[in-house]
Image (cartoon, rainbow, N blue to C red):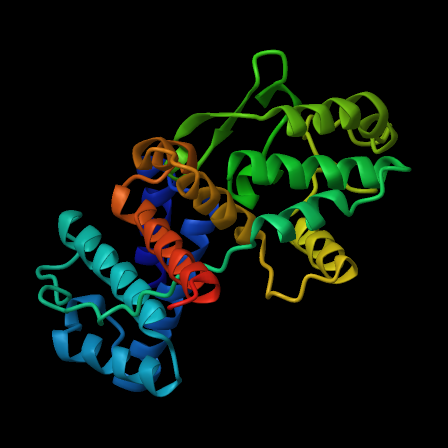
Length: 297
């Protein structure tokens, strides 16, 4: 069964061209699925898997307290795996047919208001190369709404400051162009001219835009630690994640009258329904403002 999983992962990498994070997620879900089939159902061949075993697996996850979002992700992984096996004629049937995904509870993304964004973006002290880098990263993230994995994946050649855009590779290896505002451009120019060179190591010749103190590409985890520290020092009490600035970018654009399709394109969403969640956020915020300030609310 492990060999079939390896074949499936190879298919996702080579033929589907999925992002590394997506592939890691598939692999993790399916390893837990195969482990369950062996240990709890005594199944050693995927040909012997029936619908009931998949239902039992989902029940097993539910008993562990997994959310409906996690269950839905596992179902998607299991379904894709069995469809692949059937297509490759490795098995004679697909037991995942008619397995329903759980009802998803749609939680609204947490966003920062404009005052909080300005507090966070203005907080890094630009007295040294670390401050210049942190300022440039935060400004670019809020200016473009790109994902943190896209931010840390940028090379120097992906940023075109004179033309005012950044080229990034998103999910499914899809390229998109996102405009950069004046403030982010200025922060990036200063970082490139005065800061980045001090990170460069003779040992590592890394073309990454943002480097760590070893002169290597800054990781997502490295950025997350920087963001967490800056938010705490700036006195922002909201539970902040690297995705919060992306959510804030989209929400503030829509609040100020941006077209939903344009926001979808900038965010790199394949389906506009994913972008529409931000219209619910803006409506909720409008209700809050109304309740707070209207004398007859």
